[in-house]
Length: 224
Image 1 (cartoon, rainbow, N blue to C red):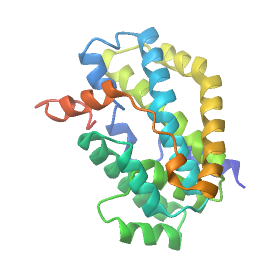
Image 2: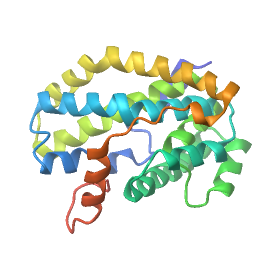
Image 3: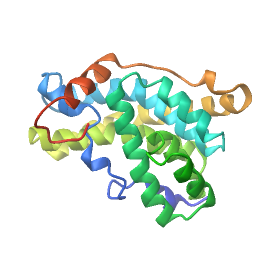
Image 4: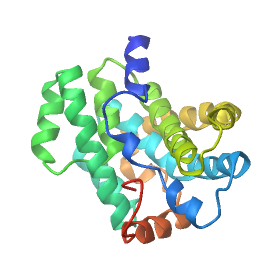
């Protein structure tokens, strides 16, 4: 298992398209729910323990080799917002495109054929981790970290927030990222034994509502 591969996959410069998405931060900033470092930290904490846990569990389960079509259907069922489903599939398609060049794999090629418009991003993330020789816990860490680092990076741009403050917020969340990733990897093992119904289904209604409003904006900085 290559820890260097984990660093490559988790690197924000990996060309997977995440820089174009705010993870709901743009809508939260406009609504006045994120105004600085403290509220950004709380926003990311809420995201981590709801949709972040779901994404981490899906990614970890995919890394264990569970049928991606079943997992994609489970991801759809846990994403009520059409705008977020579309964003997740676009991100999945871009990640798959980059990963097929980086870690060529017959399994990734098969997923590209099965989902020409893209599979859900966390499902693809788990499959990419698998292709890179990584394990379920690695996939869970990538998903959990991305769910907080994306909004943090976006908020720096949206509010001209001091990047040192945003990074400090991420550092304070690190112990919780550890716990969420560990819990997600444990849940993934349960899915192998009992099926996708045991995947978490934590919801974040304001993220869903904000995503639908954001999709209708005439002018926006981020795709989602």
